[in-house]
Image (tube, rainbow, N blue to C red; front, side, top):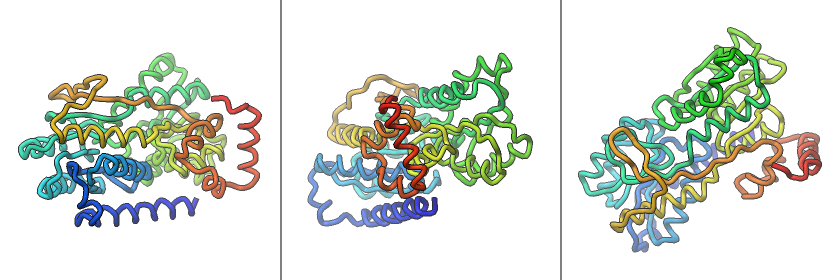
Length: 361
């Protein structure tokens, strides 16, 4: 897994350098005649957001718009300062993946004061009147995670490693989890022995919280981990404590390391959310708003203060049985790179199983 960590770090450094470079637009960006967009990501240390930035920038470029990207590094105050900076640099729309859904309402108010619309990107801003929201069906994500584990572990002890308490998506995932698990909890078939919110979606925090749960009992049948970073922390804690048999574990984002763990058998499933359509939709909506138009919405979601026009894409559960037909077929992850993270026997066993199953989902 060392190589995967190095790859993620290298991508992060490259993205960070790119973000800094965009402070002074390149000559190529300066030739764009469309509206300039500000793309604000909560924390680029998480692998998936690097794909969002890349695909958003590509689509904006196709529509003749330049993008200034900022990484808030999980600091809500820094993100607010970055919004002010981007507005001062002339962006016509802010596309915000908020660090803190509540605090970001001030960001919306500031942007609107300066005539700049705001698109919530994959996380809702709670309060204020953001202009548009693009994401996946987040409660359904929680349901898919819990359904996958409950099918394999219909009874026993469960640990819930939820996401960041400042992220509205984490609340929606938890609602989905409990919607599925409630009947089994009420009947006594399963017992939630620990439930934790993982600060900043941190792998290290998830590891520590999992170790705390294991200090109480190692008799755990399932871990509902809200994303792949929390799943990684949990899996490492289980390995360090030599827990056998390994519990079933959920995840989300289909990161490189998660796909490797799924094949190895140390993570059961992940949620696959193709980032390209989401990022492209975000760029298209931003440009329409910049041009004074209203992007087409499929629904409206209440953020506490207003009904926000929204588009929600459909997520998909992935495991060993359908990796080939989803993340590999879509080139979201490279089979060649994944194979290098596995032993020859592990890869052969995986491909043999896929062949035997006929590639069924």
